[in-house]
Amino acid sequence: MARHPRRPAASLCVLALALLLTGAAIAQTVPPALTPIVAHAPVAPAGAPNVLIVLNDDVGFGAAGTFGGPIPTPAYDALAAQGLCYNRFHTTAMCSPTRAALLTGRNPHHVNMGTITNLAVNAPGYTGILPKSAASIGRVLQLAGYSTAWFGKNHITPEWESTPVGPFDRWPTGLGFDYYYGFMNGATSQWTPALNENTVSVDPPRQPGYILDRDLADHLIGWMRLHVSIAPTKPFFAYLAPGSAHEPHQAPPEWIARFKGHFDQGWDKVREETFARQKRMGIIPANAVLTPRPAEIPAWDSLNAKQKALAARLMEVHAAQRAYCDAQFARIVAALKEAGQWDNTLVLYIDGDNGASAEGGQEGSVLGALNGPQTTPAYDWGKLRDLGEPWSSENYPAGWAWAMDTPFQYFKQVASHLGGIRDGLVISWPKRIARPGEMRHQFGYVTDIAPTIYEAIGITPPETVDGVAQIKLDGQSLLYLGHVDAPERHRSQYFEMLGNRAFYRDGWLRASRQNCRGRPNPGPRWPSGRGRFTI
Image 1: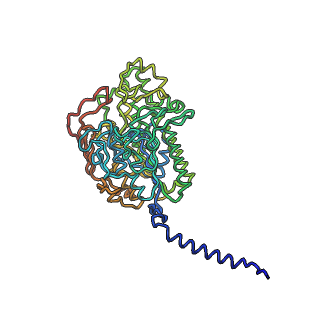
Image 2: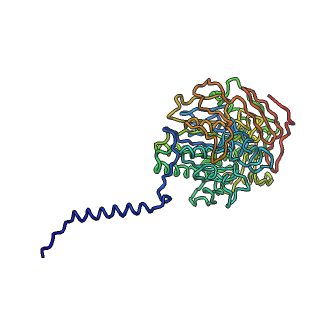
Image 3: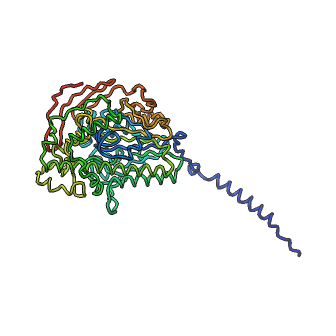
């Protein structure tokens, strides 16, 4: 019997039809719940800039060279040359309230942060518990399609929640930041910091010459590069809050050596020199009159030789710390340029969360005001060579805080006077600022940062976040200052800290100083202002 030849084409057609029918039958049996779901992530507006906020710690208005001070800050100078300087920008006089107002765009008492978290009490406006009705910039930008990260100081999480088991909803990662690397409380060592990565306690990297400011810059740069490599079209928001120049004042020895002898003339002379530079630079009016030294601060010439040497050395360490921090910011700028991100990055750099700190007391402290133990002059003198190094923990005398706040009166904690509440601000956005290098004289406050960012991006803050209705922003955008003579929008503002208070309205400041402490505990309490108002 004859064999029929094979027909491969026909066989394949039959097989294909069988598979098709089988697949259809299987598809009909797959439950709808197993159908793949596409998650639609938010997308930022076209052309939205990257955002970088830098907030330094306990740096006075007259410290950095950018605002006429004696400490060279070339990276900050360069930012100002291609951005705008704001010489009437204000903070709250202490750490936590400024940071809460910055990140939420609401007045500090409005978000329960009327004082630092360490002094929180069960009273309206002072509990230290950020409400869910005041979402942070981080959370708003997450919802707008941004990657978000926070590096450095926190100090807005309640102390009783800063534990290894949380709760974590008021930690940075719970406030809208995808990534956090830094320290939770008000201060830490530059050499051996207490660090957290996200919600986990971690040890500092083991590397020769480790120091915190460089580590924070390294982590920010690494995070930014990773982000750009994976999501090059997605904008990012980075918040950098270094510990500098809060006590303990610490810096690499070679940086301290750069300032040897630079402050031997003392705080009275340094203040006069800064005042003259500020006039030449147009930072203050040409007819401004320098406020006198408060009676509580000794004249430099009244100190003996050893007191002068110790005080000068303490200031050298402080200057080295601020200058080294500036060098780390220069590295971040270079990395952004290398990654092609610089031109469309909005930078808002605030040089201090309050005025310079007088918490070292009249003579300074070599053990740190936050530690509190009293020392003898002989003990302090014996520590002269160790200042700024790993086993040190110091703060300079109140006279230097007064000099670093030139031309204003008083310092940190004193919300009634400009020395406690005015800080330098530089805003840079190469792609958008048409007239770089100019000065802006309009009144500004820390709550203005959030609305400035939202306007720059082109978003309206949501009325509800995570199911919670939001309270309105208290700040005003600073982007309207496209011209030198633009009228002020932020026309009135209250200030209050530890009973010291003031109210600003259309160029006038009414002030009442209740108390002013050089060292919180222990240490001399400055004479009370007894509630008298001055204008």
